Length: 361
Image 1 (tube, one colour):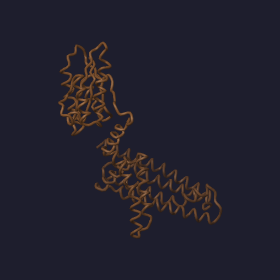
Image 2 (tube, helix red, strand yellow):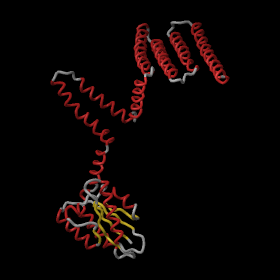
Image 3 (tube, one colour):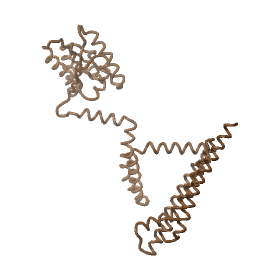
Image 4 (tube, helix red, strand yellow):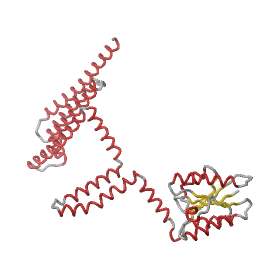
């Protein structure tokens, strides 16, 4: 048996005409459609009911029996409306005298009513879904419903409305700042903040930033030394950048430079501060590992490696700037390599001995 099912999710039929639902039968559906049209000619559910009658008449001459029915939901929410449609559909199926499985053609007036499709599918097989809209306004209700759903979602609402609100506030804030004598940089700061927000969202960095903030907060409350050392290291890196630029400017004053000399000057000025920043973070990490009981002697290799690498890069940049001789560079390379190898061997031996002592104990 084929059932043409007209769906009115917000119960316009019952509220505006007083007709009890569900409505079953061609004549009853036609009467309900006329009553709803008289009560509210602009209601799109009128088209749904007449389309149900039209499909019934079109399919009635086939090999299988055809019936038409209308079910309604509730106005007070989508979940309650879907449940009401499910209850009324159960009533309709109970009244049908069918020797074979019932199949359904669902008739709706837009995307909002189609949210009840899973409820219908859980009870009966759906052959097709017919959406009835006025030709001059095709997709208008679907667009409205889509916009409504987007604005109801908290995450999407924050993504769209927050930057839009900031954008709309920039101009009045700039005018207000001008009226009270504040500098015009307010507009630039606002635009920069909005651009930074859009960039973070566009690159998908919000999760990484949230995770970093959470770890920083945890470090603050648990007394982790790395929180301080990271801040100090950031300051040292800034100083190193400034020092590198200053060194480059001084080299430029002395003579014309090529790309290699520019890089050497930047390294020569900044590498000491970069190495100091790396040492600071490594000592902070070692301290935290020791406090947490996870300390390993091989962790002490990190400061040694940093010193060796820093000394090698500093001497190499000085060599390219003509400030040290080739013999000095060779000596630093040799000492740095030996120091790294000896440190690795020494820490490996210490850990091996410690593990053996623990095993014997």
